[in-house]
Image (cartoon, rainbow, N blue to C red):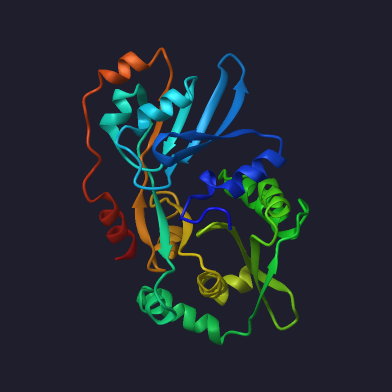
Length: 308
């Protein structure tokens, strides 16, 4: 494992390898104070080159309070930042203009022992897990092959189209599997006949792992298969030395059921820093914006609203 500290997928060395294999213009840009940023650049009609940094930057240590200015100096063109942490005042001072308010992600701490992780499950989540453990399901773990036509990736493409959400394209998972051997792990629940009824894909990147794709058929939903798959994955990832499992964004408005599912694992609701744009024409306006602080206690309020 390359990253020996918890690093989000979109800032990991493993992600950089996958993006490069897909032909993306990505760059691991070093920053002062032991930091780095994985930057992805695309050219847009009329706009020209636009660089994106998601869930970053990351630091070997505690970093520096002046990181927004260091990032801006390292990437001086048009830059969109989905900040990993919030620091509104310093971002404005560095010429970043706010675009979107922060979202939160759910992150499971895998460091405690199995009994402690089980005790942290929400009571309803734990009860449904117990029912899934008694159901006629067989769980297997395998390495995802580097095959863009894999059945789960085809299911994910259909899900994205049918449900109208956008995530990393299924081809990214195949590229990740090709460039990071044995780091894309597929957990599958099958019925007595061996027919898959649910599956979950996890990508491993250093000390952190990320939930990437989930699919469930009617039988899988009836038997709460995803709870069983996620619980088995938590156990296995902890045994492999991963300290955190990132379950992705919490969308209480559009997908409250999925948000409750994620938080029911005992995951922490971790707020990110919002979406910002830095451009020479917007920098003077950004520096004149009133200084703001993020909403206090936002993470705890989201957690209470979704788990009550």
